[in-house]
Length: 614
Image (tube, rainbow, N blue to C red; front, side, top):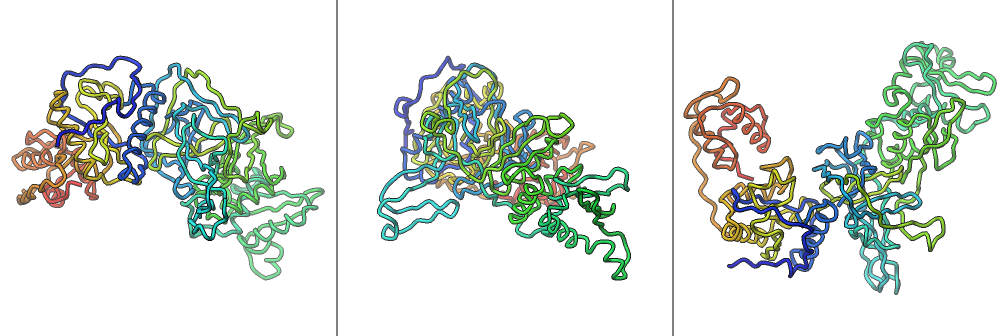
């Protein structure tokens, strides 16, 4: 079958903004994938493939600043990780970030797959400012939104538990909510932008007692570390008129450390215990050093440890947040701290609990004359970007502006991440051409340098993109595989592409093109339906370990290297097992799930011939 090429004109491509770098020939082709979640529905809807390709081009040109197809935020936008908020300068691939599963409406922790940073230049960006929101993004930056529409009753939105209802049971006309992906320039004034979501990854079995969680909240907000007492001595202060809260503290102390010291003596038992004393206008609960150290372990310096917060169940997070607000005496929806680290930790707890939160500097706190920080708790889970002209001071201002700084975007498996800018928090999206219908979309075309990861990594290979992701449509349909082969043959015939077929990850540290597509590439990119070659027989293990250092030499090394090269690994067949062979061995062992010691022993030797290439 000849290539079914969808020309740039047919898919309504935008004209490039400059001249392409010319390529006379290449070593071959590298296969890529889109990443993120691809709707499996594109398999039966070619128009969805066309729309996806157009969105990719828009992202590459407007977000990345490339001249053509080849979504981002400004430098002031941070991302929430399990270690706290990180800027684009601090974030690294592999960091675990809080993301949004747009299918369920629940947040979840996922690794950052890639951190894409694009150089400073003049760009048109869109700023959205409003109550609880501040963002500055490229026009094609993607957002997970809930969009309202009106229609005959069939669906009523019910948050994460949305259900389809038969039309006979629904009202004649109901408000419908559906989860959609929008871009900054297409967000509507009734779209809901998520600022919080219940976390799906919270522990189901509590590590701590509820009494200890509550006591930790009282300690970090209303406690002190008594420097004059033995290490670990802590106390909690309250007003004697605060009867209800005094009773709560007593109950928590009793639940964790047993009865107070005086009662313990009357019962005839020994050992240090907590004491309660009243002096003037203050009731003091004083803990001995050993008990205090337990609280200092989970809140060192009276700053809640993030690992402690991550270990709390959903109910315990709610208890911790409610108790902290109560002890903070600033009202039910806010907490003021002198220490920014303490305020940041509390904000972390609020967001994990499923509520929204914002962080802002406040005027000097107390007698020290130092600035403080306030965390405002927002019981809503969404903001709606309605213009200020319609809703007075409570509305949004949305407008274009010229931006000259760097832009960046992290990539996660479900295409989203929790962002913070100017203290406000919201979930936003990341970026995602051979399609399932065995059609090949013309990108830059033959003799033109691809764009991914910079020109220095592109001059040796053309790029072919398969419309599959790492969620949703993950396994490439036969149509995608046929189309990739069609594209490769086209580039060989029209673009003087060489014989090499590799994956994106072979030249750059990335998970692209995904495990299923990469396994197919490693098998030599066969057309679907082509019989698999017979599995080679495994030669006997040579009886010695192939290792480095020192360099191991011999025909057994050459035999192993030759087989690894047949499997697709980039390795010299020179009969010398040095650092290069060791590194290839380690990578292969990690793929196979065995100890990556870099030594070819009996197990690794057998897997070299017998393990599936996937």
